[in-house]
Length: 94
Image (tube, rainbow, N blue to C red; front, side, top):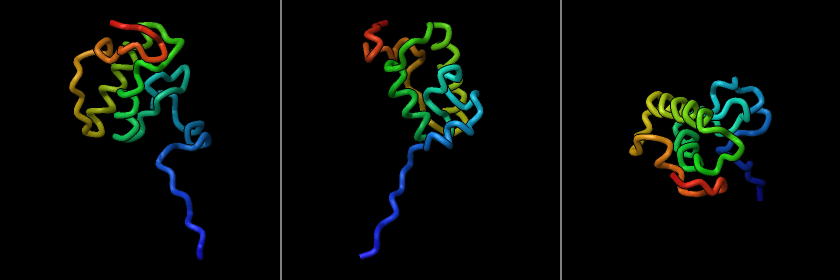
């Protein structure tokens, strides 16, 4: 029986390291890559789990996510990032 090559849709560390910082929602931390529609949807879903960033960094990240969503045709229902704050790891609620 032939071994099946494992395919992964996630980015490797090497691939993330090669990406320019502006392709991340949070470039300083290099968190939440925005390189395709799947990653944009994931960045939206995990927005409230990002720790150690200020509100101004969240605002800038939200602008980058919205721009990437337009680029990749991802429909975003929420109007602002505060609507995404469900109290994830950050424990914050809007």
